[in-house]
Image (cartoon, rainbow over all chains, first blue to last red; front, top):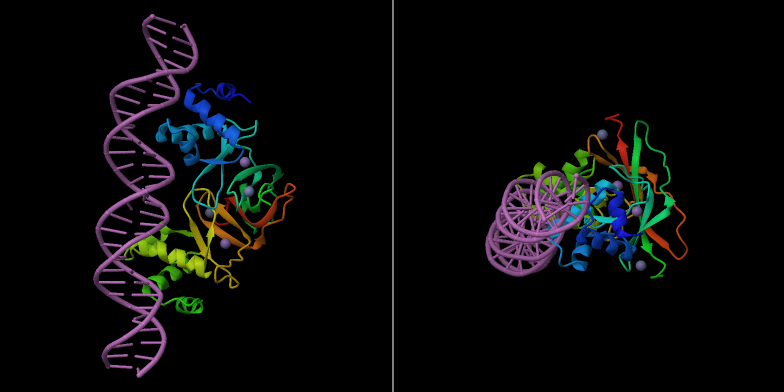
Length: 135
Length: 135
DNA sequence: ACAATTATTGCAACACTGTTGCAAATATAC
DNA sequence: GTATATTTGCAACAGTGTTGCAATAATTGT
Ligand SMILES: [Mn+2]
Ligand SMILES: [Mn+2]
Ligand SMILES: [Zn+2]
Ligand SMILES: [Zn+2]
């Protein structure tokens, strides 16, 4: 997947910062925080990075990943996300050793029985443990 | 449940602030943030409240509840938590209308098939939707 | 009831995260 | 290449969470 192409597909101008952010996330292979990006791209202004992440989330390029620390993390969306609508209903796994969080794209979040009167519109499942590389 | 008693059970001194925090959470019936407590107990110092929450979590009085916003929330533990060990393996529900997050104590987090090499030690499930009161 | 001991609190100071307004720069379309 | 609309960088700010240290208050024992 090519960064300029992704930007074009979402009606966003292709700038160096945006391409760099996308390429960084593609190479990472794990969910990244604002701070991760800031370290990887020290030439970019922090505010611009915050706005870049917000824009990418709005446009369906990135989705937020819940974390047990209280810092937001982001990962690449599937192809069916866009224009304010996300469809990233998969579980995430955070390794307690390497601290990496990855999308388990093939693991969908199971339905559970809710108390009467409750209805579900979305869900987040974060599994913690040890990943393959750290086992 | 009596606040002084809870504190005694966990080898903590019974102070006004601690009793007030516990009573506030008992009355709330939903997961609370530091800010919620700060508003409810304006006479208490913010730093003291942060330390109180950290202490309660360590001692097994409160457990953290994952939230989609990046502010930490806390709810009362079951009776089997204590001394650094938590056993709060239930799902949580956040209502998108009233913004309240509650423990679904009776809903345990289902096992899911993990990729080979991955092992699970704990999990967090946050379900979003509409609660009974807001339906 | 009192003093000694130890835990808790309040304050100041700080680092980090995230937001907004505005002017300068730059990507795209003509 | 120029015009236009978007994006960027900077400054300034509000909120969250942490640490060190001195003052205070809860327990323990006499
Ligand atoms: Mn994901
Ligand atoms: Mn809970
Ligand atoms: Zn790992
Ligand atoms: Zn509700």
